[in-house]
Image (tube, rainbow, N blue to C red; front, side, top):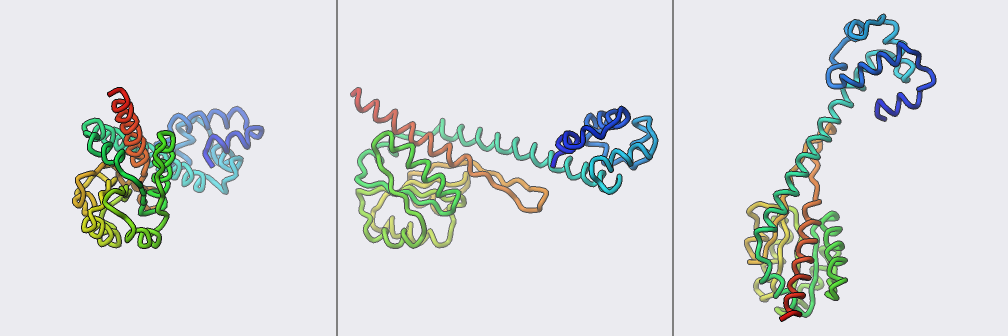
Length: 252
């Protein structure tokens, strides 16, 4: 729960002194948790007991617990700001790559393919595959989702050179994916790779590759978080480029 929520929840208990202390804390979030109870009281020109009573009105056992809460909230805010900045940079880099990309060959490949399949190597990638499917439906191109590795194994022998497979993979180096793509190459089945912006095995095996920039962000829990929002952007742009391609063909 945020500090503002605690204040709202216990609003009726506060006196003038409490609001004075809270105003100082809210305006100095990043430094308050570094102050001991005496220092904070001095900054607010109130007594030590006033600060303690405020902490208790906010449902903390004492000032020490309140101070830990303020520290945790400040650290979480830093992580959130870091994430937003990183996500913004990732999206910008992805769009820059897509703006410089020539989609003509990919659009021609999509247009002449009899069947189009989409495979995502993980749950988030599978979500991106479903969104890609949705984007193409309005253009009367119907993509078949391959939902898991077992179904990929079943479908693989039936794929032909006039089919097309779109593979969405974060790393592009998933060990179980390599032998499958090698079989695609051997059979002459074309595929488009959508991977992270780095050198990877999947992208090396096809001339049709698109890249999404993704950056891992550390969190307060110690586990890095990676957003796949850029992969959805790549799918949207691919679909829009195909729409423009079809419009040009119609006018010709």
